[in-house]
Amino acid sequence: MATQTQTETELTDYDARSEVASESNLNPAPALPPVSRRKQAAVLSAAFAAIALTIGYNQCYGVFQEYYLSSSQDVLVPSPASQASPQTAWLAFVGSLCYGLTWAGGILVNPVISRLEEGKWPPTTPSTRLWRRRISRLLAPRTVPIFGVIMVSAGFALASVSTSVWQLLLTQGFLVGFGMSLLYFPLLAPTPEYFSNHRATAMGFVLAGGGTGGLILSPVLRALLSSVGGRWTLRIYAGFNLLAGLPTAWAVPRSQFTASSTAEGPEKRNTHVSKDLAKRPTFLFSAVAAFLQAAGAQLPLSFIPSYTVVLGLTASEGSNLLAAANAINAVARILTGYAGDRLGRQNTLVLTLFLAAASVFAFWLSSVLTTTASTSHSLWLAFIVFYSFSAGGYYALFPALIAEVFGIRQYAAVNAFILFVRGLGTVFGSPVGGQLLGSSEEGSRAYASAAYWDGALLAGATLCCVGVRWAHGRGKPWKWIA
Image 1 (cartoon, rainbow, N blue to C red):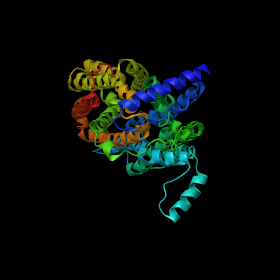
Image 2 (spheres, rainbow, N blue to C red):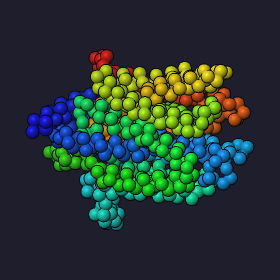
Image 3 (cartoon, rainbow, N blue to C red):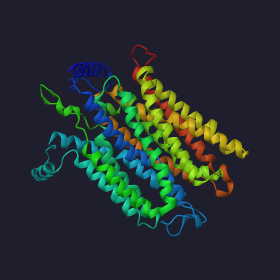
Image 4 (cartoon, one colour):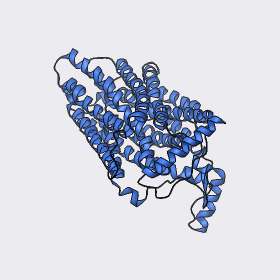
């Protein structure tokens, strides 16, 4: 009872502060219901598992990309390795499309989940109201992530019988990506509502599931690809996704707003960004920062296995380095979330983005341009360590930052739109980087333009986050911790 009273007090205090600071809310929101520690732990566990299955896979797609470009692959006909101009950009687009749809799908998934939780749809015509009522009787909030798990497994199973890149785009790209969005958002969107003062720490833990999933999946997928080939690896992963995904989808939490009410009736979270909110400088800077960061952040992960092979190491060592990058990233998300709660989420976000951009120029680009093999290898290892740690900051902090800048009632709407923009950025970044690659005869120098491109994207994202910090504090007393 004491724990619930303390939690209720924290939630009430936080919502009072966030509504005063928010630029988007003019009316105070009611206090959210109290949450027990056990319920918070259950929400964290379910969201962590969902992130591991979705973002964790996306962060190790580079293992598949390197395999498809190798001479030993058994999926694509003819083999890209036998072609004078391998379809590197298109194969990178398979992973980018999947990752992009995982995020971009939220702009459709979040409103659907909200309607299902409310048990009603906005009226239009008598005929549409009739079929909507029939659908709402058949659907429940957990139906959406369950269908997503089935779609993901179907995508991997169909990819196992593909023979061309365009078929992989439809299966391992589109079907898997949209299915992952159906699993990702119903479990992630309500999670910040269950926490108050330690929201950034909690979200850092949840989003560390992406690094943890990548850490486990990278070496496992590499071992399967080497032992049973690409087709059976895709089939095995389809089965694993069903076994792990269905229990996770069943545990989807309900939005806290469905349990609260006002004098006018049941309270609900906003699922659409208003025109007034979309015109605010904080929103515009946040959207551009999200696009640029997503375009730049995934690019190194896509090329870690292939660039490692170019340096003279084996494909297995490349997948191990990708796994190490995901492990460092997972730890960084927790630590930066903890730091953000104490040093200021906006401050920590700007610092980590700056370090990520600096590591690209200082280590990856230097590794590309140096002529000494041992030095190039050492710089590449340094890049993986520094970049993986600093890149985790944005993922851990931006959900809590959205709640802080725009208010918890606007979280679902702003988060869905920002992730939609991030999805577009992801689809944009890696394929352009693949197109910028030079010929294989250039060796490591073939990656010079891609490194410049990546560093420029992350530097632009850093400047935009500085803009968010400025716009949010404009007209208010200056705070060092923000």
